[in-house]
Amino acid sequence: MTLKSLIASAAIATVATGAFADDTSTVTTFYDLLSNPGSQEHVTAFEAATSDDWVSLGDYSGDEKTREAFLGQMGGFTQLMPDLNWAIQDMHQDGETFIVRSRATGTPVAPFFGVDGQGRSFDIMTIDIHELENGVIVRTYHVEDWAGALQQLSGQ
Image (cartoon, rainbow, N blue to C red; front, top):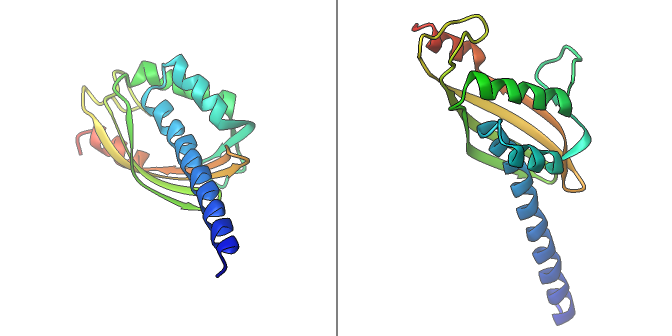
């Protein structure tokens, strides 16, 4: 390897590493919002980290949740679960695709999916796949163990 190609390789590696670090920060912004759904600061950061036409897909029904609908849901979550926390446990990146395993905990203050938890909390696993383009999230696929949450809230 010549000195010229060594320098070029180092420059490419430096640029790529910086881009990956920025993308990791972008994805982390998503979980910051989930843990602080009532914070305008986190809403603004989420909007900057996602494209205008970002969609959330949670099943194969063909229904896509828009960014506006998602933010509306998060506003409801802040009322229902003021202590909601969504902690990243593991993050893997392949190009512009991120897979995140996280842990969601919370204590609903009113019935949640029809279950009155009577002050109980839940602790569940979630898996998300975020697709980025040009440094912003354009699509998120997600699975949460809501059945497990309801079981915990019902005291079973």
